[in-house]
Length: 249
Length: 130
Image 1: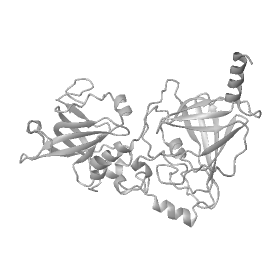
Image 2 (image 1 turned 120 degrees about the vertical axis):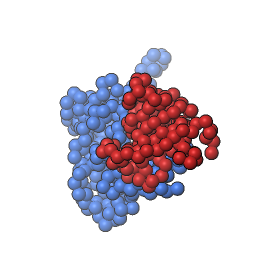
Image 3 (image 1 turned 135 degrees about the vertical axis):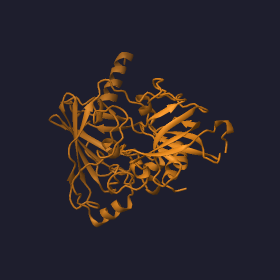
Image 4 (image 1 turned 135 degrees about the horizontal axis):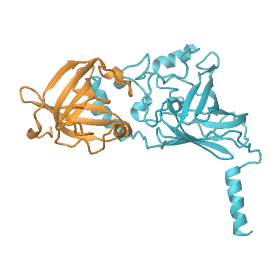
C-alpha cells in the first residue's frame, strides 16, 4: 500500500469509526455560554435545573438534606458546608453545564466533543451509531459516558455512569448511581443553543423529571481560558480566607 | 508575624451601604452584603490564583498593634476584565478598599468589584477617586 493511500485509510478509520456514522444534520459547534456574558460567570440564581418542586423519594430527600451547599435557599457558609468543590474536586458534568462558564463544541463525524473551561476538561458524546450501554464497567465517572444520535436537528444524548458524589447544580441537588440522563440539544437560532435535561432516577425521584430549557449564547469572539481548581490553592484559600470568614478557625 | 513595622499605618472605619454582590462560591453566606467596611493598610501579600485571588493587608489598630486582614477577590479572568493585573497589588503599597465584612466578625472581607485605591489612586486609571 502506498503511503498516501495508507494515510487516507488511517484518517478515515480514525475519524469516522463505524459504518453507521450518521451525517450530522445540524451544526452545534462554537463557543457557548449561558447568559451570554463570556468567560467568568458567577452562578447563583441561574444555578438550578428546574424551578419546580422536585419529586424526591424519601431517600432522595435524605440525600438532599445531607448536601450542604453554599448557594441557594439552603445555603450555609461554605466553611460549614460539604460542597465537594470546596476541596477542589471536579464539578462533574451537569454542574458544569448549568454553571455559566463557556465551553466549546467541536463536531467530528463520529463524535461531538465539549471542551469545558471550568476545570479544563472535555467530554465526548459518541455519535458513531453505537447503542447506549446498560452499564459502563469502568465507571462511574465525574463526566459520565455519553452516546448521542440526531433526531432531525436535535442532538439527543443519553448519559449514564455518573459519579453520584457530584451534585447536579450549585444548590446541592442529588442524583444516585442509578440515574440516567437524556439531554436534548438544539440550535434554535444561529446564535442560540438550547438544552433540556431529563433525569430518570428511581432511587432519588418518584418519576422522571425534565428541566426547563437552558439557553446558551454563541460567543463568536470567545476564547476559553484555564480555570483549574488546584487542591493546593484551594486549601490555602480555605485556611486563610474562607474558613476564617465564617468563624471556623 | 512577618509584617514590617514600616508597613503600618492602618485604621478600619465601618460604614453602612446598601450595595449587594451576587454569590461567588457562597460569599453571600459568609460576608455581610448590606455592610461596607473601609480597610486601610499596607499590602503584605497578593495571591493571583484560580478560582479566587486573595489580598492580605497589614493593618494597625489605635494601640499600634498590627494584624492581617484577608480579602477575597475575583478570579484572575474577572480581575483582568475589571482592569487589574497580576502586578497591580504590590507588597508594600498602601491600599484602601471597601469590603463586605465577615458575618462572623473576623478580619476577612470580600471585594468583588469593590472600590479600592492604591497609594491614593485607582490603579486602573491613576485617578484619585475609584
